[in-house]
Length: 386
Image (cartoon, rainbow, N blue to C red; front, side, top):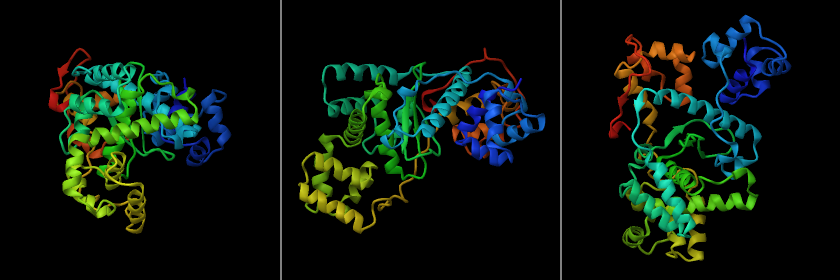
């Protein structure tokens, strides 16, 4: 029997309103509402058309709704999206669906110990003992063993146990993060950002994961939400730019021309952090006066560096790789064929590509693999492949 809740989930998963889906289907918005609420059953040809739009099999609509794996109050949104009901609903459905399929994939692999969970417990103890965010960031960086130039930031965060995904995010959010009820941390990154800005987003969301694991964001006032944002920003700044090295490099590389954005280009290449984030860190360390800070931002505007800075197009963008590695281990080792996996899940490969932000070509080499095995077939993923 057609499950209207499944239709609602798929609609939100694709970021569509009822009106937008109705236009795609060439029917009324009321009809979509009736299907979702169970007041009417769609005809077979309508169900077939829906399955084409959402890249699922016809039988997908007869399944159970995704298990609620995330409390809405546990999702750390930027303030701009905290009041957008549509954005919250879309991302909530996305996280629940994502976690459902991650759990499915994890049935086939023996994952390394969840290091990030232990680190978050250590950070909680530090927060309780009133440790500074600067000290917490220093300890987290040391525990994760981040390279001096931050070039392995994405890899080390994923290796620690965090699932990182990129996708188009509705609204104004740059990224968001959350812990699932089964203690899996997720970071969802927006697209169309430079590598250095993505690094700051990663560190910012890592700050939320470590500092705000137990926070109920729904219960916070606007001022309290802003405080959490400020804490995550400070964490990211201290995490990416450790004070003990930063001050010395600043004096050597930037010199006396502290208000000139171009003076920070060498440091940007050294740390893989944006010019504006470098100056922000320097200003907070009192390496610039308020007047010098103001002049710096006037020059940022004058030079049109607010969106695109020097080296932005030269520094390669790092992409998440953990989910692709898991899929590769499963399919390359013939634990299950691609065809059986898609049949069991009642989806096609385009559904996976959209959910995991994977290029469609990724699955091409697995399409002739016919070997099949059951869930008892387990393989260990080595440390390099997560």
